[in-house]
Length: 135
Length: 109
Image 1 (cartoon, rainbow over the protein chains, first blue to last red):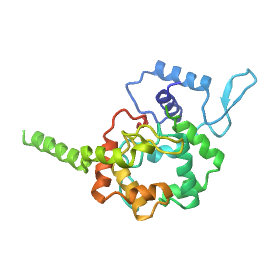
Image 2: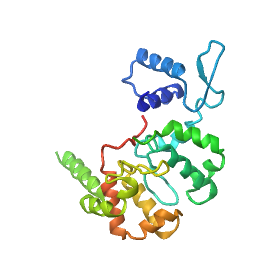
Image 3: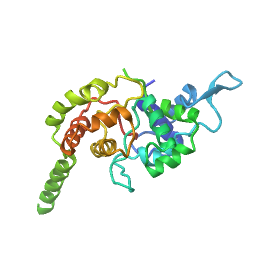
């Protein structure tokens, strides 16, 4: 499944997609596709045998979007630079970065706070969602 | 007319500022220092926990390398490589990697 369409889908389900050019029929079919294929942050099967996301993990990645999902967005403190792009990054690196924030090896205040709240399993799920294996 | 000229000049200046380093010099430096783990264009990490650099923001890369160099970010491998880079080298390799367009990195929309 194409990773970029996955992002578009989940942004749609979050109601954050403000792409006015996208027509509603396409939007609806993408949403159906999202339900059919299932979020990669974890899925189970319902009674009909369809894959559905685990309750509570559907929009788990939403916590990252406020900073990493805005093109050109910059940090404010302690130094100012662009918030790095994480979509398409290697999952293994995303996990190692989150672990380093949690352990204190990396020091950005916002990321330390967020990483501290994540279990290793949650880190892996976020990494699988945003990243993709190297080719 | 003046307003259009102002905008055009402004954009040109902004583009220069973002470039910061010299990508051609950065390419040469990267071929000596970064290539083994990140690939010549920063697009071929040699291990799963090494990041894709190609297409990443210039100022983020400068910040990361500077943090490795001054010890604010602790990674035994990167510490050794960043130590070999001058401030100018850091800007040059960041300009090189950030200007690569075949990257899987992308902004979400």
